[in-house]
Length: 472
Image 1 (cartoon, rainbow, N blue to C red):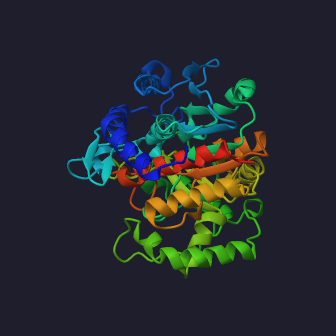
Image 2 (image 1 turned 30 degrees about the vertical axis):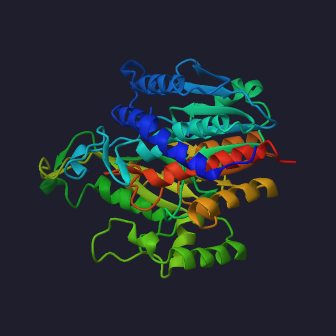
């Protein structure tokens, strides 16, 4: 039976309105912090609560051949495996996650809250809406649409983890344990990305990796009056500045660690030029910067390359520093900074983090106590080409539903699962896409999901998955 994209789109809209958005709104109300941010996640039970909610939703979907099981290995965060038996040849693995980043309610706009779903069309606001709560709903619905239309589809396995925002450090043992069940996938679909507008269907061809850890500097065993110590005891903050200068040029932002760089090909530069013609200055405009802030790069194409193919450093947390209100005139005992490096595809994360540790701990300034404690290391990813059949299906669906062809993009963020699965299944195709786009603010205040593009992507994914059962 031939695909009727108009009917698929209509049913997608109906299911989103009647079923997905109500359940996703409940999911937003569960804090569900990732294990890195909530060590007591097991006792609190919120990660389990998200899985229970999603399983209850699955039970209402009338998807034939569906089964699901929660897997637990020791004290690791749980993984939900959903299996939908195929009605045609082929195998697909879908990936999404239910854990979330922390948030500060005070930073959200009036009337909004990270744990309260608020719909203001075209958006659904709330933590976990776009990163990545919607993913499992969208993937399961794409198969439901095919079954309702009596279109053959491959066997589908959904891997839904609860540790992604921590770097997926609990996931590898599950992938090993489930090897036989996962089979030999033709395609792996990840719904945790997007693009620079909501008009096109975007496919992510490359993702940066991530290494992070805590740089600790200690100079004394107790606080010292700054009038007595200033000029004699070096401050832990100044030593932090000295150490950071070893790894980053503070004037340009360039990372000074050779192990974190890759050669940038002419092909990459040409693609950046092409993307510039499409996105214009929209990438820069999406950021909620102060009025007079200037971008680091001199041109849009340089910014696109820097965001995706060059390493960067962000200081994402600090300990040992009191609030301004509580600060006394004391030379503090220590300063601890959480360092987060984004690394380009092709950089080995373990090599990179070893280099960081060696550079920062060598020859501590003034003989201070310096340590760098790694907590996350994930490789980047670069997708192999799609087959002609799959590529044609995506193009046809995109053109019919949007009037525009699908476009390839790179993403400066990290999905550790991608590199893990590429190492495990080197012959598989990868489709990394999603509903992220300008202003979605994943990880930040006012996180929100673009509802119309999510409905449309559901139908596009249905057409893509159906093509796998006809792929030669």
